[in-house]
Length: 253
Image (cartoon, rainbow, N blue to C red):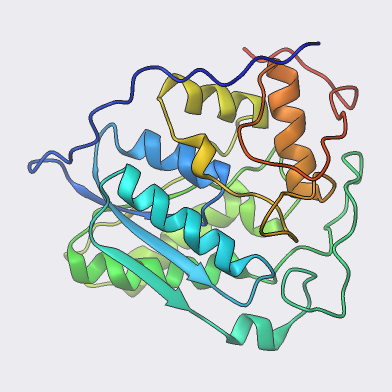
């Protein structure tokens, strides 16, 4: 299948509507969080939250976060450092002694890149901030079906955390977790981003490289496969672009 360049629709007007409710969007700088932000922008004013936890590509992810914040006119912004996740370890993203494994898209277990309970940590921070700034929604770009198998990306995890919010915040606080892409395949997420004019070229997904994406880690493989299934060229630079289309191909709806 030949690939064509990404052709985004004309950039939408992302000037926040003063009357729109405020949402905290968890933005790693990756493709999923970018598309989630584009979806949130349809109905909300956006406040962006980024988490630095000692990950290998921390600087590159922060660069993408800042570029996306400007593209979406997000305000306020919160850039949080939580070094304890790196100190705890247990993940190839934070422990230099654990190699980032090459992609195996048929693997059904939890990969070494899983950061133990990371989403609970960042959601706790997001809820604290949302309660202070008056946000009524938290958007997170978690994906259950076409992800690396992280247990804290499952719908039941977010359902349980929603109950934690109800129990642990002020009686008048109303904060709802939104996971708008959780049941989408990667190719469907990319198509949604293209349809919404999301700045996919500003995103970064690689687990181990900050100049040119490696093309062989789990995150690169899932991303490349999604673009390849659509026959669309991924706009970010890669050191290599293996073909992943043959693995579990499907026709996006």
